[in-house]
Amino acid sequence: MRIILIGYGVVGQSFTNMLLRRRHETVKDYGLNPKIVAIADRGGSAVNPKGLDLERMLALKKQKGTVAADREFGRADLSPLEAITSVEAEVVVEASSTNVKNGEPGLSHIKTAFKTGKHVVTTNKGPLALAFPALTELADYNKVYLRFSGTVGGGTPVLELAKKCLAGDKILAIRGILNGTTNYILTEMAEKHVTFQQALDSAQKLGYAETDPSMDVDGIDTACKVVIMGNWIMNKKLTLKDVDIEGIRGVTLEALEKAAKRGNTIKLLGSIDGKARVAPTEVSRHDPLCVSGVLNAVTFVSEFAGEETIIGRGAGGPETASAILRDLLDIRHNLADKMLT
Ligand SMILES: NC(=O)c1ccc[n+]([C@@H]2O[C@H](COP(=O)([O-])OP(=O)(O)OC[C@H]3O[C@@H](n4cnc5c(N)ncnc54)[C@H](OP(=O)(O)O)[C@@H]3O)[C@@H](O)[C@H]2O)c1
Image (cartoon, rainbow, N blue to C red; front, side):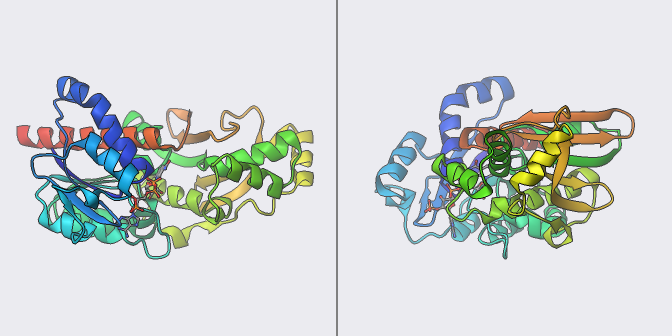
C-alpha cells in the first residue's frame, strides 16, 4: 500500500514512528505493507516512489523543520496538492491543521485525492464538520474509501464501537464528553474550586490547551465530533451549522457547587437525539460518562442493547496514529473483500 502523508506535525510524525515500530507485525499479522512514497508539509514535499526512509524523515523534520530539505528526495517546489496529483499511491493520509472556517487546506487535499482515485484516511475534523455529506458522496462517486477514526476519540475506537460492534441495532441517541481540554478545566474547577480562568491557565501550562483556546472552550471541537458521529453512525445529514453550541466560559463555581449538592457535576456534553447540541450539562457522579481529567467518554443508547459507554484518552499523537493504522487496515480489508466478490 503506497501512502502519501500530508501534514507532518505531531500526528504525522507519530504515525511514521509507529510504522517504524510496527512494520514487521503489520506485514506478518495483517498482510499490510505500508510504504510512504511522499510526505508534505508547509515547506514542500519529499518524494521517493520506492518508499522514503522514515528515520531520516523524522530526523530531518526535527533538524530543518521541513522534509523538503532532503538533499536527494526533497522538493521545495512541490506543494501538498501537487504531490497528491502527481505521485502514484493508493492512499492519502491527511493530517494537516484543522480549519473550521472553510475546511482548507484539508478539504482540497481530500477532494483532490478522491478525484485522482486515491482512498483517504484523515484525522482532520474541519473538512468533515463542514462538508461530511458532500465528501462521502464524492468518495462513493469516485469509488474510493474515506476513513476518519482519529477524528473522534483519538485512539479510542468510538466510531467503530457504534458502527461495527453495535451493527444491526438502532442507535437512538449519543451523548459524550468529547474534548479533553474542557473536561480537564471543569474537573479542576469542581475538585479544586478554582475559577474558569485559573483552570484554563493551568491547562495551558500543561499543554492541554492552545494559546487560543476557543476551539475547545467554546465547544466547536466537540460540535465537529457531534457532526461526524451524527452522519456516520445515525445517518443524519448534518454540518456544523446544524449544531446548537454553548461552550464552558459561562460555567461558574456556584453552579458547580449547586450541582455537587445534588450528587452531580457539570460536563460539556455533545449529544444527538432529536437535535444535535453541545452544552454544559449536569451529570450524575455515578453515570459512567462522568470521567475526570482529560479523559473522553461516549454513551450510545441503542434500541435493543441499551446503553454502552466507551472511555479513553481521546487525543494525543501516538493514540491518533493508532487510529490511522486501524483505518488503513480497514481499507485493506475492504479491498481484499471486493477482490473476492
Ligand atoms: N494532536 C492530536 O492529538 C490530534 C488528535 C486527533 C486529531 N488531530 C487532528 O490531526 C491534524 C494534525 O494534528 P497535529 O497535532 O499533528 O497538528 P500539528 O502538529 O499542528 O501539525 C499540522 C501539520 O500540518 C501541516 N500544515 C499546516 N498547514 C498546511 C498547509 N497549508 N499545507 C500543508 N501542510 C500544512 C503543518 O506543516 P508544518 O510542519 O510545515 O508547520 C504540520 O506538519 C489536525 O487536523 C488535528 O486537529 C490531532
